[in-house]
Length: 99
Image (cartoon, rainbow, N blue to C red; front, side, top):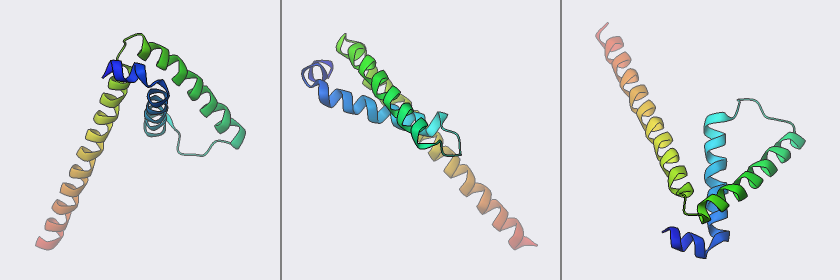
């Protein structure tokens, strides 16, 4: 997989940027929107950071794999929260039904 990403750097860069953007938006983003200029600067800095991570990926560090693990863990947490909320709703409906 590392060899394929080294042979296709543009695809690797896009994957790194998309995964990095997803991690930022799910973990570090505040609830309010930033002004447009700050958004542009933020995404430009993430694009620059993705380029640096691409260099690390090209030097045989598993950057894409680590980002995929991070995204997978975030999805696992979201599924867990969904299941817990569903169980709480079900328990509340049963307790309301008994009364």
